[in-house]
Image 1 (tube, rainbow, N blue to C red):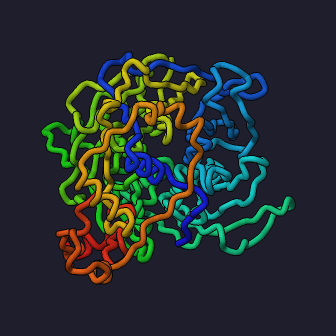
Image 2 (cartoon, rainbow, N blue to C red; image 1 turned 30 degrees about the vertical axis):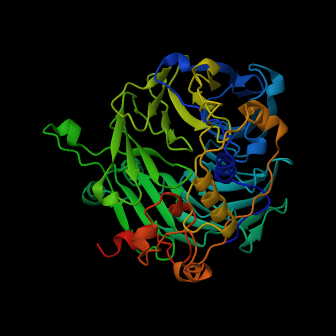
Length: 506
């Protein structure tokens, strides 16, 4: 797989700042006044309003203030969230991407390219700067409901459709044909039909609408292990996991264990959306039983770890998403509100954001600006929210916390740095070296970082002499090395495991 080395990911950037000891860590409390509305913008074109269907912040820190919005009329609009809303200056550009509703929008290729999934049964690849279509992905026979890019290789992506299929695409593949405007038509490299066909749909023959609703795949995710896929559908609350190297049958599936005596509570509930945190450890499923379920992808056999309630999920347009650091879950709701839960406190009442006048549908977290979120609604508006500075806290300046993310096998220089630091104890950093988040983002552009050297445990063990001060012992079993959540993101090749490895033997 190709890896982009030109720019650091949010995970690499934040990890670097935490190791250097000057990253101020904010937290969010439970009061509704934690968040204030920074502004709202009405989505519309040519004087007519239209409901937004998907929102997505740019993923790189350089452009994280840019928000892409897709709507029911087939437009893609880009907004600068640093500009005060409402203002025409906030709208960077917009264009007609499809002649049908756009259900999902995603940024790829260092935020230079946009993917759009539409009701016209196609996915389009757009140059965000030139607003030109670079490719059309064709093969689905129903509306494309969800699209997800590969976590490290922007040329790979997966899509899910109302026709009950999900497909894998490679943008490097040779185009099968071209349109009059020289736009390449690309076909999928693999497609799985009937991935979420319910048992009831198999037994009962009904009209076309019933079949479409039963088989529809509503959400799809390319997981962080780079080879596994998670899919969810309208048929039931099961999340299925697939290995892209062998798509004949799913590896495993996870679903809530519903124990209820009433027929109403026992009925099958579909899933409207899936999301995953930046490290790839946790996965959320927004279910039509008005609950959001949290799974650990390495312990799927145990079912959901936690569930979060309080919102109303009465349509498949209502989405939820876990924050990049896996600390909070943000969800829309059919009651016109947005809700935010703390992951480690599922029983505590969520923060409620209450200014929309219609069903709150798509939501998103800004990956680089802590506390900035976007919510969209059937009231034709997109609203930006920021956490109040008075409710933000950080580690004390006199004793800054130095958080270390332990890689599976760190490089020698990093190893030496950590060992020396342990001998000397915590180092006091002057206050003037602790810039605020805003000063840091404005005055410190991203600096290239060299990723750690990866090797097998045996080779790394030989690299250090027996007289080394380190008393670490390297476990030979993959299970020992996979105990650290960070190893899920970037383990050495000898230890790398996928969802299939965990459940194939079961």
